[in-house]
Amino acid sequence: MKMELIQPFINAADAVLAQGLESPTSIGNLSMEQEAYRRKGVAALVSLTGDIEGRVVFDLDTETAVRVASRYAGAELPESDELVRETVCELANQVTGNAITALNDQGFHFRVHPPVLHTSEHVPESSEDTEALVICFETASGSVFMNIALRYNVRREGEQAATTGG
Amino acid sequence: MEQFASLKRSKDGLPVRYLVVDDSVFARKNLARIVETFGGQVAGEAGDGMTAITEYERTNPDIVLMDITMPQMEGIEAAEKIVGQHPEARIVMVSSVGYQENIVAALQRGARHFVQKPVKPEVLYEVIKYVLGEDGAVANAARGGA
Image: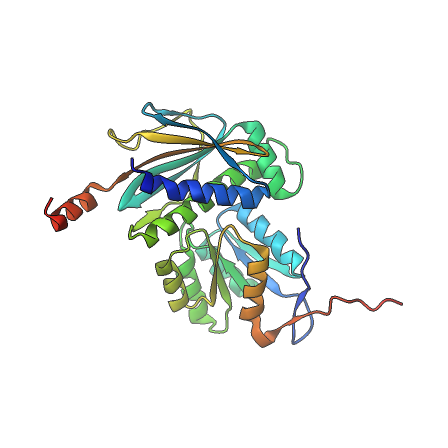
């Protein structure tokens, strides 16, 4: 997985979280995972199809999700409030949308699918040869994990190879 | 949240009425809170493009804030259908996906403007003032006290 695909997501997450939470964020742990993803708390999954394919998962432990959602709502929300899960989905949507806007400017075309709340413990692997990068953003409300598994579409890679004679 | 000078309808001085269309409840609530700081009133909400069309007919809003990526019918298609029936409709697309193709497609199919998420209230305020044009007026912030 190339950094040129990842960097727009890091930039977008940093900007969206900092604006929404009205406080700076910092990048904490960064790790590669090849095993199936294990959900930490409230998780939203966004799928991408097109020149780049794969998925992005936003995952917050339950206490952090409640604090983040309460911050956005401007009022203390109970853990059971549907708005807590909605907030995580919309964060995933905004970060992914901003990132693919930047990637589109670089010539990549794809479709982003509406975020879905991820409820099972494991996220299915997007392909046999895709590894995931997990980035932890430290915010004033707690840790926000972004798990990215993306790869170039094989057809596009083939077309590029053909045009360069490779 | 920052408070803005109220935007009113110039024809009758009443609050600007908004239809907020987004499949995310969170996004709808957030937009509703923002337009209320503009002195606006949410006339209706919809979670998809199909419902947006029927809600437009029911509420006849001054401004529609329309997401793009939604189930059943996406925002650009819904905007085109609304403007087809109501050429005077003022639709502002509000989406996290802000690349040029999307913006051009939305404008070609009848939207008046585009705002990228996460929405900055000061940006949306200026866009709405622009889209309302002479049909909108900024109310005098100073209140005459006795």
